[in-house]
Image 1 (tube, rainbow, N blue to C red):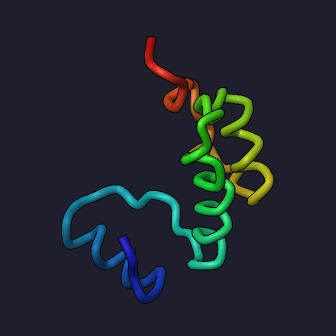
Image 2 (cartoon, rainbow, N blue to C red):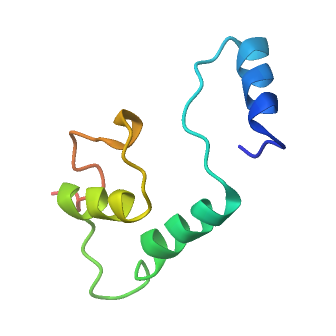
Length: 78
């Protein structure tokens, strides 16, 4: 979701009684999209390991507990 400011995020969360997640700037979101999707259409694309996902997050400074995953959610299904 896109919000004008963190105050707007907080107000929306309070109104909807939703927990607040992470907030990214448009610049960081764009960098994440480039790293995440740059090779998705390649015939050689194989999904990502948990280590690869964590490396992308770390490269962008996304290191809070929110970005720590214990599941390899993007690996090819067997």
